[in-house]
Image 1 (cartoon, chains in turn orange, yellow):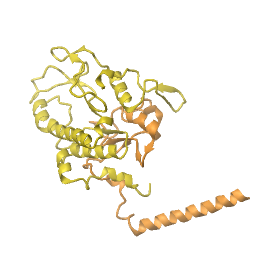
Image 2 (spheres, chains in turn blue, cyan):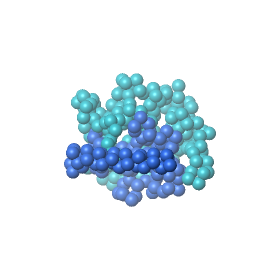
Image 3 (spheres, helix red, strand yellow):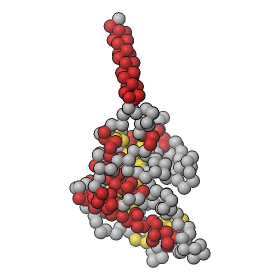
Image 4 (cartoon, helix red, strand yellow):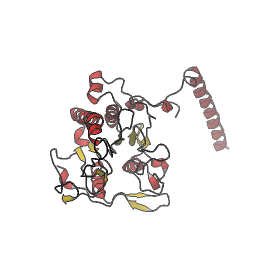
Length: 109
Length: 200
């Protein structure tokens, strides 16, 4: 069983030292967690253990689907894609702009 | 993450030529191996492909039906995926710098249990084989041996800690490499010694 007291897996050590490289994590596991007993019973040795979750390798779980495209969780759904998504990005940049303006104001006073 | 960066296209195989996809096999494991090659090419340092337990591929825990499962369901997709990966990495000039390891966490009993249908081989931790290719490993080398029944190591036993140290060596992490835990304590990444005789 996985435990945060465990030593890190090799992928955990690689992720710890090299972080995200060229836009992708340094360590990736496909296409599921190793277990015979289902979620909650994943076997030891797959994550960064006592180094903490920020150094875990990316475990790309396709939840039974075939690898070869990004899993559903990584793709924008119909509802959030397109115009609605663009509205969100625009709203976010407006907030960011206000935040930057406020910071500039604080810094100048 | 609001937008998946273009690098994440490495996970998608739709632009791979059909012949390439066929070479790896249009099954869960073959497709995983093809994605693994794409990730390595895109700069990912370590890719783990877990053996996929699916409706068509059972697990390697062959307590029963060992021989039919190995022959029909386990070894054919594994052979196809691994051989395609080695060939493809070689063709792209990546095999010299990429270590490919096929392994499990323990072996199977040397004596076949004839009671379950199709024969069974149970858990066996004392000795088992593992496969290394590329990454500077000498091809065609058999390192170590087991006794005549395949039950115990005979020559040059390799402890699990040495095996792990060998992989770390290939990744460029020496024996003195330390990681620091959340409480600030340093830990060695591996206690064993790399098996240097498999390289070169």
